[in-house]
Length: 117
Image (cartoon, rainbow, N blue to C red; front, side, top):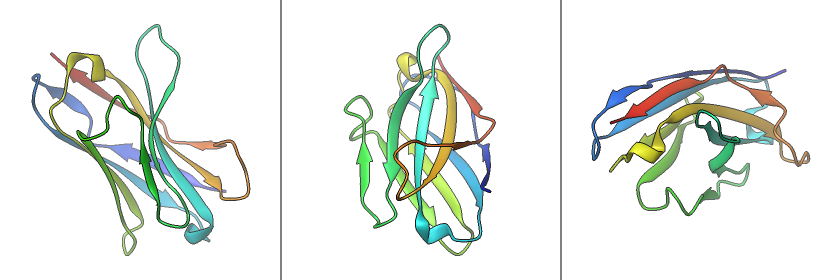
């Protein structure tokens, strides 16, 4: 069982920055892929980016060059550094986890709200 707890959301002006954190509690962290997703009001959830179990990081085109995913392996915390924020980045942001042999993300955090105005 994986526990994920996000933090770091808030309100920021256009062009500003925020860093989201996701504390990951799992017994075999190296076997898991971790992802960031977001869901804007009235819209479907969308993938933002992910850190695969082999260390590869991928981003959605909409955030490439502005968002950076990283992980502190000692603390087991996943980060999403967001820069050059736009109003369209406003959403609830979630981190998620899946074992590398499973295609779908099955474990989710509670989410943290990001509002850009």
